[in-house]
Figure 1 (cartoon, rainbow, N blue to C red):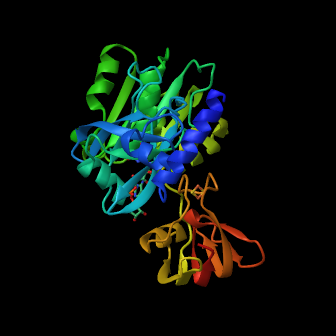
Figure 2 (tube, rainbow, N blue to C red):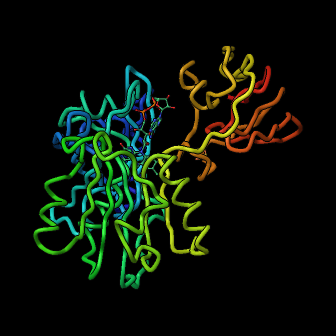
Length: 351
Ligand SMILES: Cc1cc2nc3c(=O)[nH]c(=O)nc-3n(C[C@H](O)[C@H](O)[C@H](O)COP(=O)(O)OP(=O)(O)OC[C@H]3O[C@@H](n4cnc5c(N)ncnc54)[C@H](O)[C@@H]3O)c2cc1C
Ligand code: FES
């Protein structure tokens, strides 16, 4: 008998004796990061960055394929017995010698996963991971002049880039309410001391919000620079309008952490057909969140309308696209993106 056939027999035997669990379930308990297991990561350290932000050091499992600086990774975390998935930018450089990666999370008020990771995550905890993805990256041929325009936790993908790729001429304009809220402040000042970065640091509590239209005063050659911007919706909307008004929209690359919600309407009763749950939902809350709140297993990805990882058949009723206000009514085979759709009256989803 060949060794492959022997292995197959041995595995079948193991399947018999470990029923109803599979042998892989037992292996998951003792070796969750092994090759062949669903991709996971083990939290190995948690470093506080500011009062409400922390860097989580993760050892990815054997299947991890690496990342490009600026990309994000989805992590699945169990919070109060419910597995929740969120996206976080990778803040470690691609060349990190120990093979570990970091994400840096800012806890937002009432945020389930961010507060869990910042305040309760413990070394040793195993979390679910997806492969890194995202287009917010530098091109292969790096531009001669770069501007990084960031605010708050929007600094994270840019820190990944700064740590990874040394650029000849890079200016960063970063805003945070106060000095002590600036994530990675000492790393940024180290780069300035090494002449690797020109930094304009704004403390909005005292300096006021950045007026993007007045950027020229801070960075006179801003329009010549290829720009990567990440931060709150207001900053990114203003930047997109400003770059477009100057006819250079193509020089601006943005990363949004949440979708732009333009229209909220009346809600309605939402039924999750397969799970048999019915809940009342308002017209502003994405059906993805409504389902998760109700304990329904909802597929998801980016949670902001990009990846289509959340599409679900709409069996009856109507939903509203929160980005455009467009109404979709149920008809044969119609699929909706639950992360950017809210109830528009009573509706039923196939979940
Ligand atoms: C591509 C991408 C990369 C990201 N990278 C990072 C990162 O590096 N670091 C980081 O801290 N976060 C990052 N985020 C945001 C992150 O995925 C979560 O949205 C965030 O941590 C909030 O999740 P939560 O479970 O704590 O909040 P939830 O429990 O989902 O929401 C709680 C409340 O906060 C609101 N809310 C949700 N998200 C945000 C937000 N981003 N800002 C303000 N209010 C919000 C909700 O509408 C709700 O009212 C990224 C998001 C994307 C799409
Ligand atoms: S989760 Fe990515 S589109 Fe909805």
